[in-house]
Image 1: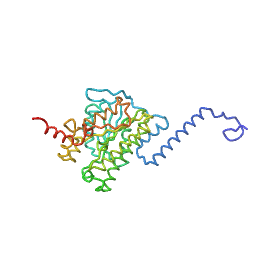
Image 2: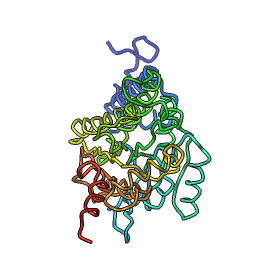
Image 3: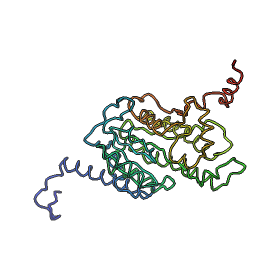
Image 4: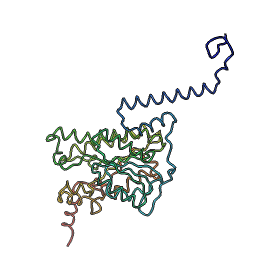
Length: 346
C-alpha cells in the first residue's frame, strides 16, 4: 500500500533518495565522533576544548589541518641550526639562550616562572618570530594538558615537544643524597615531576605529533643517568628512566613517524646551577672536562635544535651525551695530569 504524507491512502510520496541517505549517514558519523570525543574528555578529564577539537578532527578526518605555512627542511646557518620553517615547538623550562637556536619555528615556552618565559618570548617576538609564553608546572597533570592545548590553540598544531623541565629546586637538591639517607617524599617529588610529568606530556602530545606524520620528542636526561654518584640519587635515577621512556616511544611509535631522543648534559652553567652548586664542585667537574670549561646553555640548545631538525631524520631512540668529555675517560684525569706533570723531566 502507498501511504500519503497524512498517513492515509492517497497520492504516492517520492521515495528517499540516496543523497538523503548519505547525508543521514554523515550526520550519524559526526554525532558518533562528537559523543566519542566527549566520552574521552569525560573519562580522561580534558578541560581544554581546543585540544579536544584537534583530537576530534584527527579521529574523524584522519589528519589535523596544518597552518598556512608548511614545514620546510632545516638548514645550517653558520653555527646555528635553523628548525624547519613553520614547525610548531613546545618547550618546557627553556634555557635562556634557547631562542637563538630555534629560528624558523613557532615556539610555546612553558615554565613555572611566567615572567622568565614571557621575557624569552618577548625577545623572540622582537626578532620577528612567533612565540607564546605559558605558565606551567610539570608536577600538575592539568597544567601539562593546558600547555599542550595552548600550543594547539596558538599555532594550530604541534610538531616538536622538548621536555626540559625537571625538579631541581635547591630545597630538593639539598635533601637528595644516597639511598640510605633518602627521604621518601624527596624521591616521590622528583619522580612525580621528572618521570610522571614527562610521561603525561608525551602522552598528551603524541596524538598531535602522529597527525603530522613526522613528530619529534626530545627529553633532557643527565650525564648522571650513566654514572653512579654518592649524591642526587633520586635525580639521576629519574633521569635514567627518561632514557628508557624515549627508547620505548621510539620503538612503539617510530614506525608511525615519531622520533624520540634524549640529550644528556653534563654540569651546565645555567642560572639554576649557579644557585645549587658551590664553586668548589664546579671547579672539580671542570677539571674533568676535555675542554677546560663547563658546558653552557647554548651548547645544549644547539644540540636540541639539531635533533629536532630534518637533518637528524635518521636518529631515533638515542641518548646523546654533551658533557665536554667528562664521562669518556678514566676517573680523576686531573690527578693523572698532575702526576704526569710532576714526573716530567725538568
